[in-house]
Image (cartoon, rainbow, N blue to C red):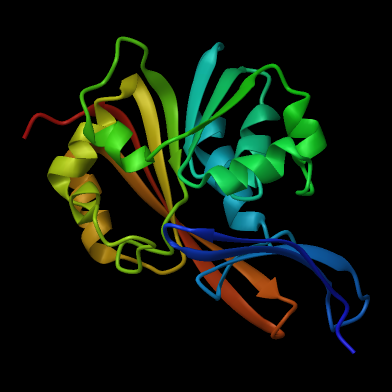
Length: 235
């Protein structure tokens, strides 16, 4: 018998959104928090290696103190939480599209909510990260930009920002960075066109496969992180 608790079930512009807690079937059984969107699995508190690495890989490379980090997509908060573990990070700004997800955080319904809510270095606001990054930057730039919204550039939650993943879109996003900033993007699948586009925009680009063992299905899976760093190219 599966132990399952529905914590929230709400209609959104992207389809039904569900926050649930359930016990794993494999031993040792444990409670995990999961999110589904439009009846499709979105994320889990059981496997967070790549969400954490999305923050740690570029921040380990970032030099200097007083770092400002922009996170696109709050989710369960693991990327923002990992960014806050770095003492050199002064501020983490999260832009989340779905107000319901922000409400879960404020109501402390997610695993890291209490700790995140207690941080005076974190601000979470409602908005479209793609529209923000495709618009002209403000005077206040970011040292690190971390994007975890779509499943992959090919498998988008809302098919309306294809240009973001192309050279022109990435160049506009990179304009929001400081001169020696870093941009990182999460994808559940390897994506060569994105990799090619990033090499036209950033002076240095790296792809990081993050492999983990999925306890739900007893198989190994690989997520991909794409990181572009340092100054913009002019070509």
